[in-house]
Length: 377
Image (cartoon, rainbow, N blue to C red; front, side, top):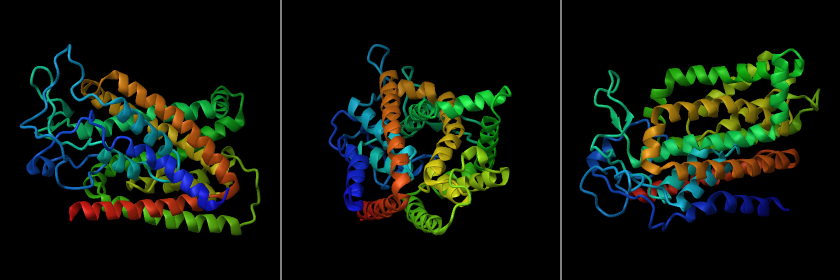
C-alpha cells in the first residue's frame, strides 16, 4: 500500500464516524445565552469551536431532570455513544491527539450546551460542588457531562491494552513476588516515567485549564508536535542502535525519567501523550514498536487515574444525565476500537515510523484552524 493511500484510509477511519452524528435528530442539543457561555468553567476538557450558542430549539432555562420513569435527563443516542466510543478508542493511543478529535466530535454531535442541569427535585447537578475554591460551585451541563463521558469510557481503552499486553502485566506481578527480575525493572520504569507528569499535572492543572484549553492552543500543539515527530523519526533513522532488541525493562532509571519528562508536554492539550512518550522512547534507544509498547503501559496509570477521579467526582451525575446503557456502550466500543488501533499502530510503526501521523496532525491542525476561523466570521 502506498503512503498516500494509507494516509487517506487512516483519515477516513478516524474522521468519517464523526459525520454520522452531524444530523442526528435525537442528539441532546440545547442553546445557551451569551452570558451562560461566557460564564462556562475554564476546566472544560474540550473547548467549543465557537463562542456562539449551539444551534437548536430555544430553551428558556436550565434543563430539569426527568422523572424516575422517564429516563435520563439528556440521554445520548446510540449513534452518539458509538461515535464517541470510536473517537476515544481510535485516537487515545495513536500519536494524533484525542483532544483535537473530541473537539470535532462534541461539536458535530451538538454536545456543547452550557445550561445548568437540574435533578428531579429541581436542584442543580454539580460538576464541582460549592467550596472555598468555588464559592458558587460549577453546575453540570450537557457539555461537561459529555467531556466527563469521554474520560470515563477510557476504561474501555485501558481494558484493550490490559488484554493485549497481559503477558507484560503478569511479568510485573511475578516481579513483585520475586519471580521475575525483568518484570520488576519494567514496573520501576513505568512508575518513574509516570511520576513527573502526575506531580506537575497536579501543580499546574488549573492554570492549564485556564490558559491552554482553546482551539488555538490545540492547533499549535498539533503542528509543533508534528514537527517534533518528523525530527525524531529522521534522527532515529540516522542512528545505529547499540541494542536493537532493547526492551522497556532494559531502560535505565535515567532514561525512564527522560521519557517521563517528555510526557509532561502532553499536559498541553493537543500534544498527545502517546506521541511524546513514543518520541522519548526513540531518544532512549527503543525501537518504534517497543516505544509504542512502553507508551501504552505508561498510559495505564495515567488514564486509569483520570477515569477513576472523574467517576468518583462526577460519575453519579453523569449517569443521571446520560444513563448507564450508553456509558457501557461507549466503553465497549472504545475497547474494541482501541484494540484494533493499537494492533494497527504497532504493525505500521515497525515498517514505516511516525511520519505519516505527523502529516495527519498538520492537516488536522489546519482543518481545526480554518473551521474555528470560519465559525467566528
